[in-house]
Amino acid sequence: MIRILKYLFLFLCCVLLQTSLASWIRIFDVAPDFILIFVVVAALRQGPVAGMLWGFVAGFSQDVYAPVEWLGSQTLSLTIVGFVIGQFEERFLTLNLPLKVCLLGFGFLIDDILYYVSIGVDRGNFPVLLVTKTLPECLYTMLCGTLIFSFVFRNKPQRTHVD
Image (cartoon, rainbow, N blue to C red; front, side, top):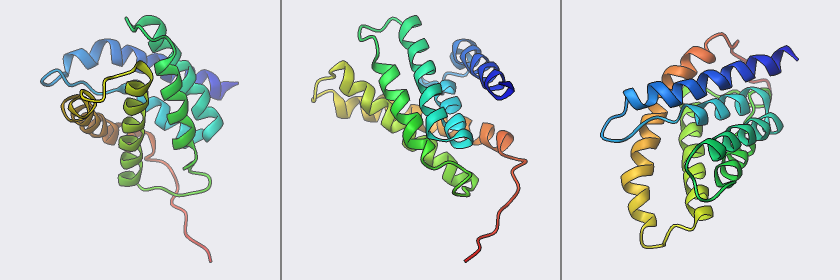
């Protein structure tokens, strides 16, 4: 129960960061996605089921409060991202910081591609959106994720590989 309250508090902090700080640190209309960073952290720390749960909660909150025509598209994409990233859960696989950041970038790409497909983006606009919007936001989110991951995962004991 304490763990759920802790993650709920962290989720609310990420929502506040996304709605306030993200607009301040926007560079050329590119802002990091703190909510996706939260979903990736929850999935890596708790596994695929928790990743799906927090992905659903995060996506549903974005769908309800954002002016989006397609209700459920963020819910679907973040739930899938939470599950996929949760497959790399740290209890079974030790990931170093660069791998975690790469997983964050992979999750970001999955999220945006699924979102674009679910809202029905035209095939002609799809590559343009990937290059002009998705890749810059992915890189910026990975940069912010590096800072957050180095703080969140700093006290994890190093495991040794046993054959």
